[in-house]
Image (tube, rainbow, N blue to C red):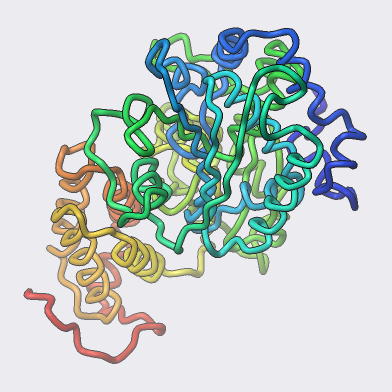
Length: 455
């Protein structure tokens, strides 16, 4: 079955960011038809029945999330758009915002109509200056055309969209951290419950959706559920908790590949096919050793590890919501697939990862604040050629004890910080042990004393 991109179909057109060009391709007709022909509850039901799951990382069913709002709430109800795209090597949302902002805005309008919200906040990371300016221009066009504001097209539906720039903190990608930042406070995630659908922005019911998710809402309402479910992977009959992995997905290919890019494909392509057919293969004629299947926080795939009772390897797992979890990764995440070649030290890679998460911990929870810092110090010691074999067990123990899953932190940042540590050491332990045995000082390590390691 041939696949034609829909989310990225317009990005190469010269007028792709403009309202006139979007209108010429049928843009906003779906929203206008929904205003005239559908009740808000019908839009929610269609999105729920489509099987659309959030594209931001967790993969929670979008329509189901919308139903968590209190019934007959007097308002206001808010929609917060999470465009704080800060996971390393992830830029699928940026492409949508810069190249086809009206597709995203139409998804926002449909979502707000469905949840009876009259106000949407678009929270965008500070570094995305071009995306911010492009979106603001698109919002201004919509106001001028009567697609935003009071009594849109005489329907009685009002909607305002406000853009809000973040300040560069990774933690603002967590939905309650985003809300805290939006309110002008330090972006410390909130204890849940209550969840944002009950008490979110300004203590009012709030839905937080990702940019790509809202672009998918546009396509679901435009093309229908049969089309959406014709793409991707149906639920696993052996797993009653599996809701399926339907629809198109934006995958970013990064790292040691010949052609890094963002591509749109049906859910479920394997890592091997994504890298070889769409990423141009591994660079410099080398071979892949490890892969991040969905951003740093998802952990590592060992491309040479055989799957149980199969001739296939972890390199052949499908990139859907279930595939990475079958090989001990945290999940699909942002679908940012980062390839690491066979001449790269996993000690160096893990050091880079630990630096990132230690720096980006918000510091609210002691296990995360201290745990990410100590993991960095221990890996730094390994990298300097001063490591001990017991350091590997300490790293795994720390990574297993921080996060929501072991119940020691408020948000999942430390789960994401620990997952690459535990998977790197469990899957590439021989490489770490060889580095320790050989005094494996990295050629990139700085000749500085390890201050405050305490071991």
